[in-house]
Image (tube, rainbow, N blue to C red; front, top):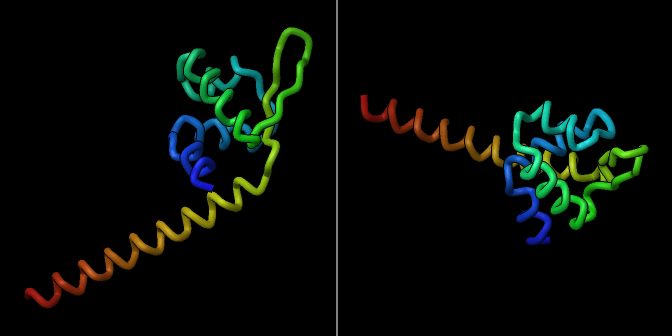
Length: 102
């Protein structure tokens, strides 16, 4: 479990997953969409693939990557929802402290 969260802790990997949500893409397409260096995208794709989150398919000279495990988006939503709720509680607490100072 900690390995999965470590894989998801890198912003470029999350951006790649988001790009692939709309369908399979080649490395060059991801480079264009994300504005990142090809070497970095390839490295991050390798990590996501090794973690079992991506599948790849050869299309002529291209290799297209796609989401292998769609539950990853559900997991991200759960985690993001928790972080959002925690942030809202902190903001409410800060607002209460501000009112008590006046």
